[in-house]
Length: 188
Image 1: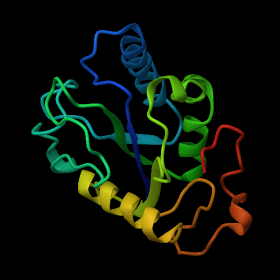
Image 2: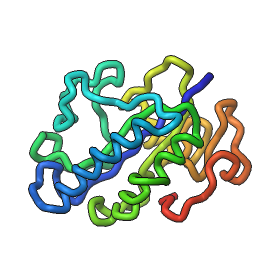
Image 3: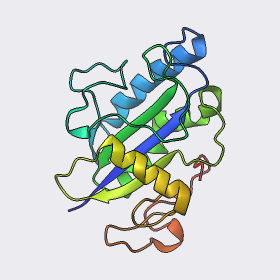
Image 4: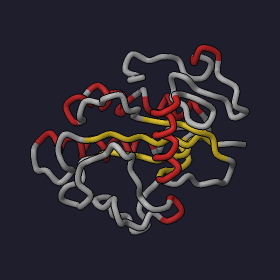
């Protein structure tokens, strides 16, 4: 049975290493969100560094998740002191489970505050979904290429959003609501 891969990406207003209260709040809230989401029904796994170091993104050993990669539009730092991004790569049993985890509970509360932490997007999508075969582990590069494809071509079976989802067989969900209803916090 196929699984849903979900890649999210956002550029932060300040580097993760910034000691400002808003940055600290974002980081602390993120830890709580990760813990909650990892217990959500339908969650399978997310990319984590092989050595457990969450502070390092570029150059870290991500194991089967591959080398860390970011979209071409990311133009900020790439060192531990200058990195200003938040990104996730995860696997789910299906679209509904991932949608519910993203748009309920602690993550929904965090989404309501996204303008405090993230730069305003200029047309780039913040997430992309795609189906992978059972047992496959998506890579960071898969997520980046799918997000860039979505940005260039819109939602399609190859790369889609919660708002315009596709089933594993490539058919579109009727008006985007069969598996993932619109949500007032949904950015797309």
